[in-house]
Length: 303
Image 1 (cartoon, rainbow, N blue to C red):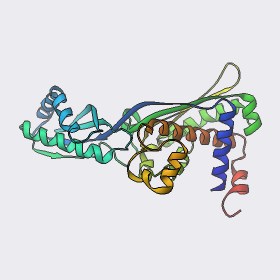
Image 2 (tube, helix red, strand yellow):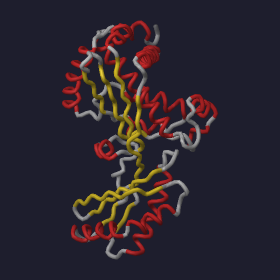
Image 3 (cartoon, rainbow, N blue to C red):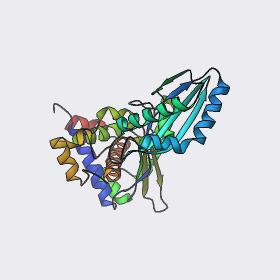
Image 4 (spheres, one colour):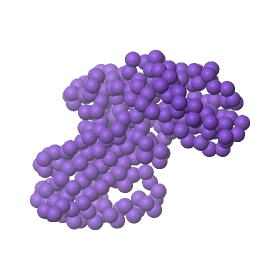
């Protein structure tokens, strides 16, 4: 789509003019969430105590299935007579959904063999919210939790976007009310556009855009009249190894970014977040300066 290509390009131009983006992966976790069913709530509570006491053995069972998967912690949530567990793993440079499924299944087999009183069990309770946006993944992280931030000079914003920092800041506060009223999982404007394009080009699982679309956008005016902007993507599911990343063109795209293979996934996550930030600042500027519709009329499809 012509307008989007132009919009992301000008966002990247603006960010580069102002010194670039600082991007940081702050958390890393991939989940599988089994549920164990008991006769009553008290037995479910006692089971969780046992899980805590036996974490090291459970960790040993999971990690025996993979040379990469590392079980870091297990969340527990009790409801009715159910014990929901969220196994949280680091999965190296792979996205890791299949990896953590195999590892969690091995652990659950050991649990079933060593704990009496479990009436029923399911490997997935829908509490990992695989391929679905959810509040728990916004709070607890699924994939990579990454923040991209930059300070944009006022003169650069006026030159490239024809808009003042105060206009963007004010629009952001008004749009925040709209986000709250709508119940949306995103205080930004269109992060899935950049994420989807990057996913298709680099061989990611595009269905993971559903989780990866959540984002928290924040801006503030500096004492110098410049604009600080920041976006946090709490559930960015990416890989630089395995799956579609090895397909010809997709591998080439990752190699262009120096992001193919092992020990590259954090770098790639930071690049994706930076692309998203470029798109956010560009669209926010277009809306604030009333260029949005005219740009689509000029550069959009069938023009």
